[in-house]
Length: 256
Ligand SMILES: C[S@@+](CC[C@H](N)C(=O)[O-])C[C@H]1O[C@@H](n2cnc3c(N)ncnc32)[C@H](O)[C@@H]1O
Image (tube, rainbow, N blue to C red; front, side, top):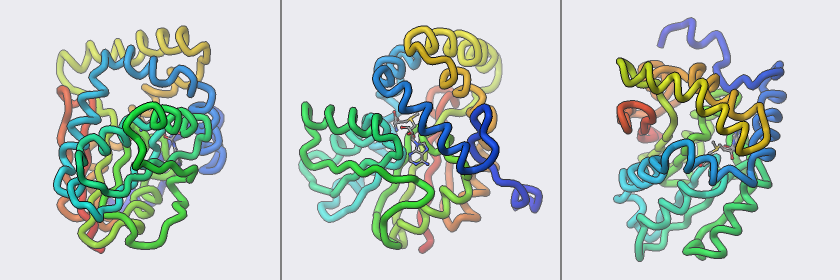
């Protein structure tokens, strides 16, 4: 890896954050403040394409999800839609699936949705992705949808995912990307101007929807992210673009 990449901590930096701790606190407060309207805003602002992305991600891990003894962790699960997509793909198999998030308000909504729906075999845990309360090698699959980008230290996040994965276990990180070309230009107008305006209006909170495009701009481009994954101990690191690169799925296998 380029030595310069090792010298700086790369991670989310919400306005006003000075260090890793204050960045994490700001992120948690931000999601807690929008928790009541998070689902509605997600679906409106993504024109419901988010459902397709969660489904495609879950489908990529069919082989693990169909194993009855598999242990699966959905990190930064928020209100649980990625977690529910994993549960649905498992079908009649009974892997243990846990959703983890450090915002109590987001988790409460996930748990409430599970009670109403098909989530009887799911579990929820309040935990920080950078300090997971699990032993080494515990999981066969760790996913994270639109959460990883919010970590205050991406390398520490990747190392923690690698730590809790069993040798040969897989990781799937779904997050936003920046499409190129003409479509990319039109998308940027939407993402940087229209989306923050609608998000602020519907949520009644200003910060989070201005932070969203800024956080995507800060997120490493695919080549760099893949290099960071390899450095954290993942082999077969790959990135599959979704919907012209508006989102993408990073995959890797723990070398253990
Ligand atoms: C954009 S939401 C994504 C929620 C869900 N995965 C989805 O696809 O809708 C990001 C979530 O990541 C959580 N998060 C951010 N940093 C975290 C950390 N260090 N530890 C645990 N959760 C974190 C936030 O609380 C928030 O619920």
